Image 1: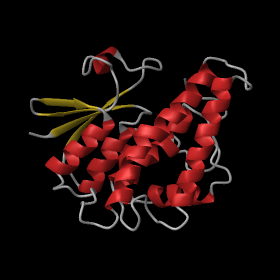
Image 2: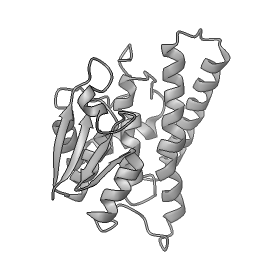
Image 3: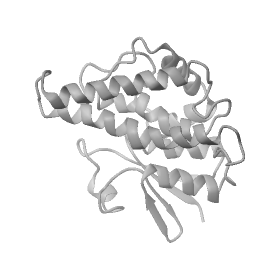
Image 4: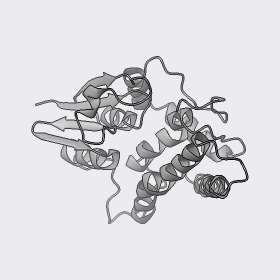
Length: 221
């Protein structure tokens, strides 16, 4: 039975398409348009919270991007793109694999929500969010100064998870990468991967990719 990947346009479910392309895992892609900004009813019916991504493998329906990535990589990819505990880069891999969704993406979300709420620039929530985002970008930029990939020398699922937050997520939270040259070089490396290019053409064919320092002037949400 073929793996089904349900992708909501302009969302983090692009990660799952990217992963499947990297692993050469056969899958059926179902793409859903927003209505007008949130998931349509048919997508919400897949999962109680209506969140993306959602995958289906026979009787299994699974949400949460990290869980979907781990499920696919281990069940269909023999654990490829996961650094093993015996590898010297394992601890770094583990940190960045969890950091992208456990620390970085929630920080971006906090900035996005404070903006959407119309809070003034001097509000403590706005200031706190921006400070955390700045420190996160500085940490990531430092990591990439001497490492090609987040785990170190090898491309991994940590990189698959990270790309969305540095690119498509900036349609929702319009932060800049100006001055973070190592991150920008990393984004360019990622964007040149054949699997990434195939994934984005399939998942969001009409969307302009945000690969440079500047994000759109206004967020989608």
